[in-house]
Image (cartoon, rainbow, N blue to C red; front, side, top):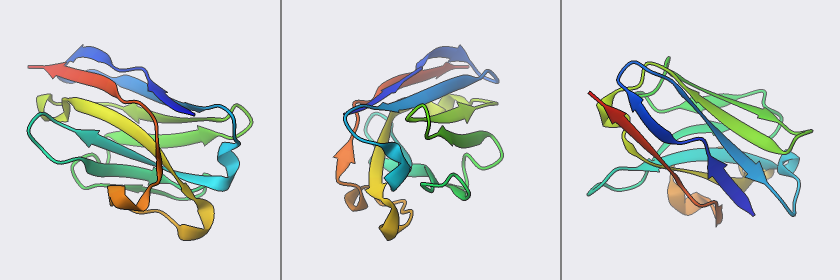
Length: 123
């Protein structure tokens, strides 16, 4: 099971830290993608962190503001979100992809998803 948490309501310019916790399996064999879906919009990939944590990827709109990290010993992945904007408002999801297949920004490349966590940024 994957469980995303840490969402909430924050003012523009603020920060949140999302966590993605795994249970029942070890995250160390998986790359983890972060996605979000705003009301009325398609789900978009915003970040991916490789299984070793050595490489991370970011969609342009979050680059420089969001940072993904992982602690395989604790079986968790985090997404630090700074300088939040109202357009970051969405439900955020984490998903796993077997490490051999690399990272992807496409949701169809991820077979296992956690429940989302709502992030709301007020202006």
